[in-house]
Image 1 (cartoon, rainbow, N blue to C red):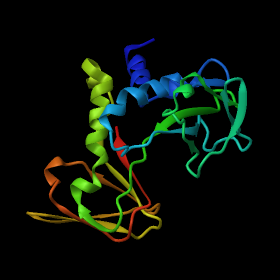
Image 2: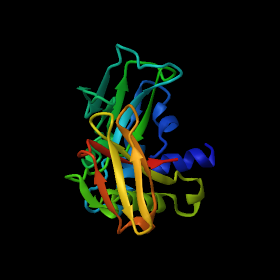
Image 3: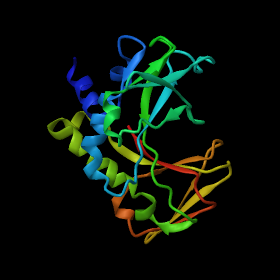
Length: 215
């Protein structure tokens, strides 16, 4: 196992290889171990960890993809959300012994992780409130990576998702106003800048989702 892969397993942030497994049963232990280790960084439950099914070397997931949670000898179907994600429920201690059964070979379907954050209410707030998930993610990575943090993903921004296109974000800073327009998917990625913490943010409409942007 390479050093980079070992770190990815520890972080549970780049879990594709670890979760591919040698067969069709994907163990939840690496994911839940990572979530448990990072938990002290997020006492307010600002970030929620989701597993996401992704196509491998093809544009779409197989139409007959089916997942089951195998726990205590019983298999229960898993329903995916609109983003092909599901909650691994790592807050339940017994989930560490569970696995995900996949009806597709690993050269067709892989798994990753997503980190949706608590969505602020309303359209006016401070930049610090909008970006509250970023310090949490940075601390979680620091706790997991230790001396190997130079290999870990970095938080580069904040991905905001609106329900429709044509939206924008305005940030008022002491030296002027910055405007960021959403793309055709209703997504805009703001830069992460701790110096903007006291800036005021105006959204054109309430957000539907927010996620730290990792690179």
